[in-house]
Image (tube, rainbow, N blue to C red; front, side):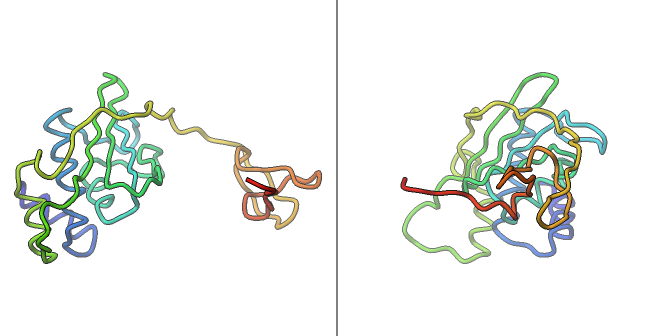
Length: 178
């Protein structure tokens, strides 16, 4: 374990916790399988799809350089402690999923963090192939002004309601039945 890198992750995140350890360890495992996965500020050669919005995502951001703003950190809201890493150029990928905690005995936060960071990787995580395709590169969309609230939204998020172009917040979905 790279203690200096762990300390940098803690500083970036704001505190030390088991969730941060999950992200840290997931990136370490990804690096073992894929090699160096740090993304320079202007490229999308490494893409991470995170299935959660918890503490571990901060470790992923710090260690890989992937960010939502650059379009190479994508949130897929399954709620699972899972991270899929894709290398665009080579087509290689890996999905790292936190296994359920072992045994019935509860662990303190400190014990849990230590277990995540120090136990054998195959005891803590499943390493798989992603079950979905590499997302396309980030695109820039024209903005469209919502005819209800007056705020601009990207064109692919605009809906038509009562003949007007409206943003997703102003749109009232029509639900009948199942």
